[in-house]
Length: 292
Image (cartoon, rainbow, N blue to C red; front, top):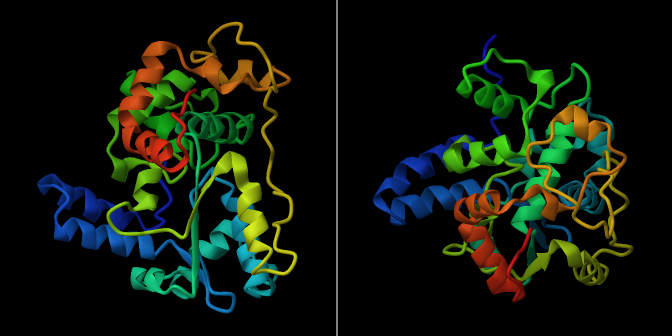
């Protein structure tokens, strides 16, 4: 069985950045990084808004709002593609292309950042558990499962899945250009050396963003996220770690345990090392040191 492949989604530019990074954060690296970032930011010239989507950071709701308020939702309704596919296939029309526009004070630019520990738990529960039921395996998860199982010396068995511990160990060993957007470091989108965002929004405080957008978009709060919502336990005490729990065991649970239960100390340390830039940016922007 051939290894499943990641979605392309502008990773060619990220690969170029990875190669250039070997010499440090030089001019060539910044140029490739800027090209990649501009190719992903969505611009609404009618309402003068620029949004940088990051997977697992409310991007489905905010992309939907972008399409509706920019008048492009009619095209989506007439397309056979889902929303994410539709936007990805039309980035030549929807994307910013030139980061220079971010310096135009008449445009409102924003990005949403999430606690890195919670983002990984969300990605795992969504892609490796709830969207990989039975014989179906989510296409974002499949390449990671295959790589981990081959690394164990096993034949690929996608429905068997992998544990959260194996997922994090894989991320720790992988280079940025090998990662799917759902677990790519947020620091790459934040672009500290390239961009000054008008608003950096904490995922847990999206209301501040929606309040501001209402001054630009009449009725500007996004509609509900119509995708599958993972059933997280609320205010549940930690009774043990679940980092080695199997997909089948998770599916037998009524709720996903709290994020802290996924992180024994050694696994927390791996995430702190792999996503050190994300953690530093989160603390700088919000004055909060992210915890599992």
